[in-house]
Image (cartoon, rainbow, N blue to C red; front, side, top):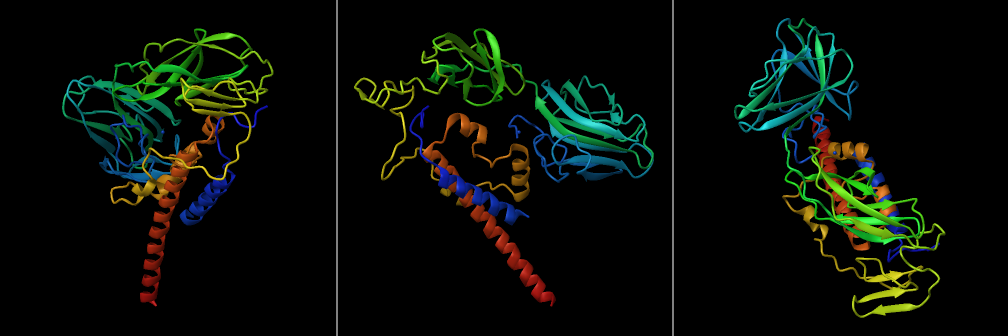
Length: 404
């Protein structure tokens, strides 16, 4: 079995540094979809999971950020009637006349009689709906706007009595989009006797591509990938397979099929990741036509200039980055995630923003230059957090000293 599929460097030290930064962040700290129209910071928004109620107007209800009884994430919003009568909360957002909007949310009643969604404004075809029961349920509406502003109203009762309440979570407001994405272009990244690693590019959409569906021999094999690569496993040696895929946007529209890619697996039959190479070959191959170098192998995977079957040792490696070095973190216009935002992201995704997940690293390996750039970005962001926290500590010390 090969020690290295292609040119990758040992990142043990980088991993140790990465873990150290995570520990430091935790010590110091003690999914937006661009298509969302409802983008204000709000505990009920599917796009922004914050301990905030900005953007929600109320009548005579108390507005409480709920942290115990939530549908998903960390927060929901509780509207609590503090007097009898028609008690409600409202969300306002801008619309375009004659455009369809999809409104999706989760809600539950807490003691209210006929609590629900009534008297919404700005839609020509609105029909009210009760909140059914005391368990979380999804409610989804598609309406056509007839003005330049819409108002969503949430009633704690019909009418309410004091103490009636409703909970709402994951409010999502999006324009209805029926435009399908452009199909992607599918290529072979590498293969072995039992696997085929596919890569694709070129899929575009007016609202953004959110996923890809991979088909093998005309049958759907993977429907949830949002990466630009995919590994098809458990293949038979020396066997041909046909692959194609579709792009899916945030509204569920699917593109037409990509080009059909025929992949014939290697014939070694040992189930190892030969990556389209013959591991028993120890010669050096130079090709004038493609300017590729193969050490110990006979071919170089598509998209690479150098292939090495085995470990590589060198005194120094220089990487010429095409991306900007992360000094942009220190620019005045750089958006630094707050500690709370960072915490919410880590709890949901289980890795740092912009850092590949363990699954992605396991599948695709590490790119030396890019990973060093990303690690430095995290170092600089951590430095800004430390400076900010130190400033707050000094201010607290001064305030304490003045009181004494």
